[in-house]
Amino acid sequence: MKILMVCLGNICRSPLAEGIMKAKAPENFVIDSAGTISMHEGNHPDKRAIKTASNHGIDISKQRSRPITQSDFETFDKIYCMDVDVLADVISKAKNEEQRQKVSLFLEILGDHENAEVPDPYWGDLNEFEEVYQLLDRGCDAILNKI
Ligand code: 4NP
Image (tube, rainbow, N blue to C red; front, top):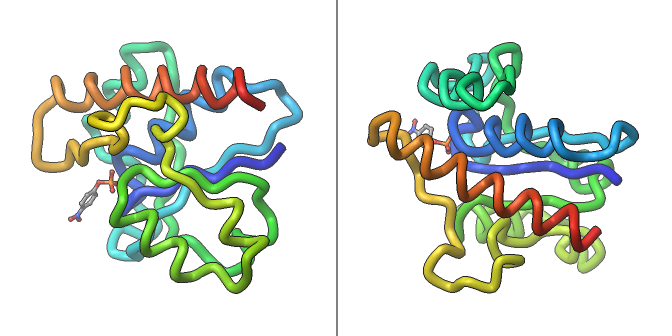
């Protein structure tokens, strides 16, 4: 199973989702993350995301931001988007129905409409990163249960 986590900048939410999923998933799973913008390309995750992951024993410090590419739609089986704007953007890049079928909202699986989006913690503080971590942790458990 190959899973891609996608957010806007690929420096806060999706790097955390990648790190959490890597820590939980079977070893033969491939987990990666990307952003819909290339503004932070090549950068390591936001220091607050690194710190939050580290508080939970997960090292995401070596990840590098990259934008989603056309080949991601062929490589990955599942593409999980952190919010509805990202979802719309990613779906618009899919070339056909098979590729579109791979794309969904990360939190859809929790069936909890209010929490369907992973809030962007970029303008927040460490508490918001921790809240995002908890949501991502629940979402990853639910996704793995279903798979
Ligand atoms: P992310 O957070 O999409 O979770 O990585 C953001 C990162 C950067 C920006 C916004 C959100 N930005 O505006 O640069």
